[in-house]
Length: 182
Length: 182
DNA sequence: GTCTATAATCCGATAGAC
DNA sequence: GTCTATCGGATTATAGAC
Image 1 (cartoon, chains in turn cyan, red, brown, orange):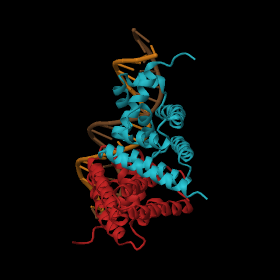
Image 2 (tube, chains in turn cyan, yellow, red, green):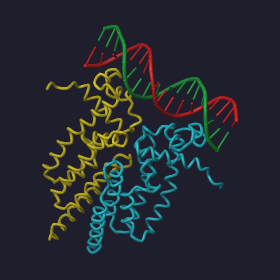
Image 3 (cartoon, chains in turn green, blue, orange, red):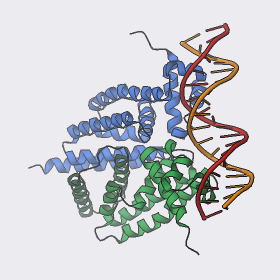
Image 4 (cartoon, rainbow over the protein chains, first blue to last red):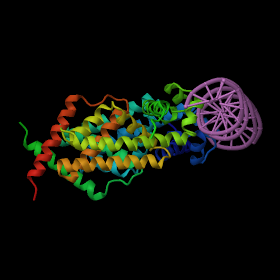
């Protein structure tokens, strides 16, 4: 397939940025177009309606998620560290788009909620394979969501030290649970 | 002080319901007025502007939070169980308003973000006093946020069984950490 | 205190030039 | 493929009757 026009990607990126920084209500076509450096008409050429724009972002997340899950499973530091660290920093295109779509999922966008669900399930599976305990895996996935929420609220994120303490705790528990296996 | 008019409370409740069920964008004055059973003009008598409505909800959460923190610290089952159970079920006025304001906090409402922050800090403190470990307390607070996010996305909430497993895990870890004290 | 009617603005979408 | 100009509907807010 021919390389997709750069404007399309710029629009999706701007849309995600505004959704995360200022919320659903601020993400008007005009605001997105301006931040992307195109006109409203130009935006609407690539995405014929606002719903199409939302679907485009959801689809973009679907593509990025596959790569992220693969990276997580291949991460040398293990799935737990990978997941909790990426949930804390929120730089990177994937985290931005994930947060943006999770905001869409709070509105009337069933597909957005479905993709978020799929991503969380994939992460929980990867963590389970890493720590070997379904309950601990669930706990880690919940903490990941909590970290995303924290990064979002605008309040300061977790100190690097606190994150390290948290990771140490998880690894301790994982080791203890492995030792207690029947 | 004289009892505040019932219409005011009905409007705030309707506003919170729409915010949680359908998102920021769906929470128009007209939609809120209809769900509250008043007219747009009637609503605007109590809250002269949309911003005033948002501030009213934020203030309402501030009041409810004080009571919730007290209940949490006095809960016979302990702060951990209280927090994680109420984060899972989301019935009750407090949980509704908390979720509604946490959505407002994603928009351009600094005060909303501040109240959410304060609540989380109060919860973390109460859990720390319960389990006696700051890192575990942080972990529990993050799981609480994750559970709220889960309840929000529309995806199914946690099974009661899974919640019980999670609580058992936390209590195991708390006991182990207490035993390992220097 | 609550309503109806309406003004003013904003937003999504279309039309058509380039 | 991108732009400007503009229409129609939605949304916030005001004015004034009851």
